[in-house]
Length: 91
Image (cartoon, rainbow, N blue to C red; front, side, top):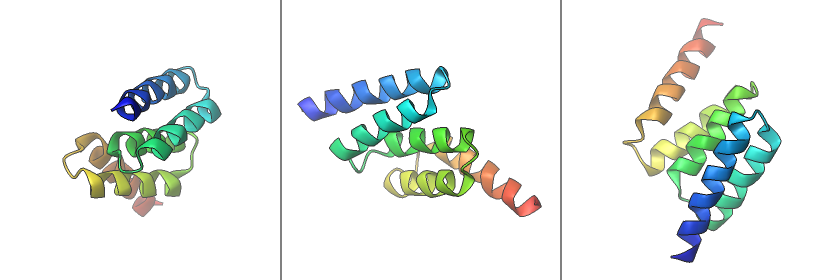
């Protein structure tokens, strides 16, 4: 149970870094959370958002897809994935 609380703290810290455009720090926090809980769809989704913001579209798509495999109801991940797939097809 302690790990779950730690994962939540790491997610919040990662979001804080992301909002302050400290992308490397955000990725680091989300990766720590992923080590504690490798099947956490929210962590994968948040990592995807950071990678998308950095322009690493392929990595973002991979992370969103993994998040949706774990939690098909994670609509935010689906929206981001649909947007990325749509843009890559237009290029």
